Length: 331
Image (cartoon, rainbow, N blue to C red; front, side):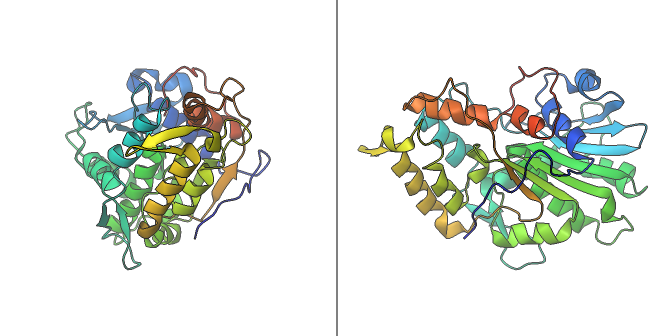
């Protein structure tokens, strides 16, 4: 059973790709990344810009011209306005939008019986079919094969939240698809922020084995990357004690009044049979302070606190990065 401990601090050496990766992940939430990317990352430009899918998936490929470094940045989900205001909205987001109760086999694993969630597979399929608004006529994979894989360029794959979840899956696929090429995997970096687990232990262990330059960041007070790992969801029941205390907040499930703590423990039990697991390679867990505005024992404050902790700004801060415009939605 997987558990996590706070194992990193702000003085721990981080890979060079971490700072541009967290900013690239943030730019995916910008309304116009093509025009605005230079505001956040001078010297970078968007060279492939995805057309948002009907399910709300979005990604772009950017290039730092000075170093010929490419990056695939994948946006996380854009939750409803009240996703952190009440249990029903949050449960809908986790259980339906991410669809983790049903699973599919992952054929790009060298470890048998690897699975990913059906919701992740849907997002991955959408990413594969995404069109380029800049008119290349190529899919993401076609563009990367021509401009990155064949000439042997540096590539960063990154994303926040659901974007990090998809980044893990796409990176796993890409490494398998280029196995018979001369591309050196030392040129590939994978960096995710607040990513929920995409698959089971076989998937996670296979990804760990595939990519040495993989780094995963988890704010200890962010409940999103705990999902849908059984043990980690169980710890959410005790997340913000003494306040907001999930044990002192009640909700109703199927007509039965239970505490929010009990609800999370029920969810943890539901996820047990699926064996979801986070990666182990370079899995950094750091801590942040709680937002003092959300410390009442109410449903609203619990999920407002969760929303605050999930914000990409916390991950940027851990890496010593200041986001120029912290008002963008990044959830």
